[in-house]
Length: 320
Image (tube, rainbow, N blue to C red; front, side, top):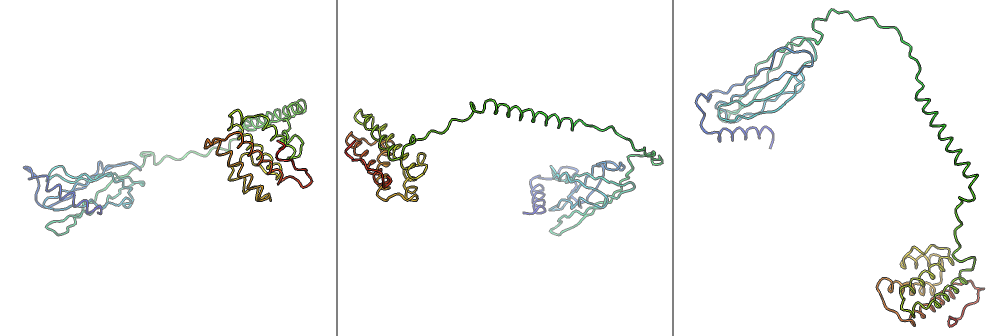
């Protein structure tokens, strides 16, 4: 619904719900009045402006169509107040301001009503606003002569601050350089340990698998710890054999990486079987006996035998 339609509906409801007009209420011809808060102001002053619409026998009233750039005026619309009782006026409120001196005309504003189902337009009276300068009474004052060029003393505060900061940075850099020269060897990071202790991967893994069996974790019922150790040994060996980082990868990520690195299909299948068995023990709490743990180690030996260099001598599976 448009703004005008809402205005008509609101007035119609107000006229219907307000009941009979009180004594002295005007029920005759509608009329409009326009007035200013005052008739004189200075440049830029805001002066209140109200438009009162007495509907009389009108069935509908639309808000005045006031332009915000009415000629030399700047208009601010504040609102449109409906009557509280029948016969009282509808009041439009706003302000006007002018930015040149002289007599400024506040223009007539059309107000559209509906009387006997016929549209009717009433116009407010044009008003005059006398605008004077804020320097009233001083129009004849001559401006003072311009002063000569003044020389200002240079301000080196910012430059001095920048030099101090630069000197501080140079001092810190010199301190770091001296510490590096003096304590460089002591502060040097320790070399990364070799996981295979300078052994060939297949030699290292045979030794680690033997140590795992000799720990007798399976016989002691510590199957989950046994499978955790077996999983790490297999991943570390395959990572060293094929130059891969497998320790942080899951079983589903290890197998594609081995295939991409060119591992034997049989070794890849064996690795998947061992790692999935260890995952079931760690996460699904699958129970294994000592014989099943030894079988898993023998399967790890087969992985090493299938992936070791051709010149390396295989280890018998029963040697463990």
